[in-house]
Amino acid sequence: MLLFLALTKPDLRRTLAGAPQIRWIHLSTAGFDWALVPEVSERAIRLTRSAEAKKEAVAEFTIGFIFQMSKQFPALQAARASTAGHAPLRSLCAGKTVGLVGAGAIGCEVARLAAGLGMRVLGTKRTPEPLPYFERVLPPQELATLLEQSDYVVLACPLTPETRNLFDAQQLRRMKRRLF
Image (cartoon, rainbow, N blue to C red; front, side, top):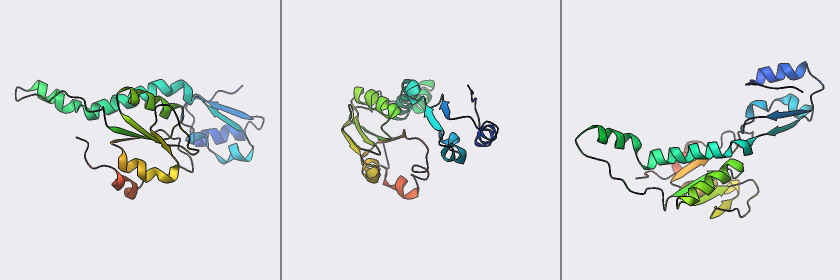
């Protein structure tokens, strides 16, 4: 048994060079891009991860960030600290669209929470299929549609050669300009 703790790509490569018997690596993280070294594919090492174990925490953090942005918490806090006025309290999530780039364990949990807040949920998935809480799941080739319709865009996909450089200036220009 071999335990990897916070390894970098060079660390992993050195470890694999000294341990030719390794056939399986399990990561305790949702992300796995740091483990995509040539030795893993060359030696057909099985690579697994624990995305399912982190889905609630990551989804709650994501929804918390959407709350922070939609409720304008910094402005609300500043207004309450002064006597100049107050920021209005109103629902700014219900009716908004969240676009999830990646509909795996974490993306599906964000979709569940967002739908519970009355948000419309769109997603992209390598192999699109109807999923609970999603109004539509699109293929990656329709990312532009998701960007154009979404008030919030969440990257819930792993960093892989397919997703590296997925976003560029052209993609960012497709997004809605103003939220509030």
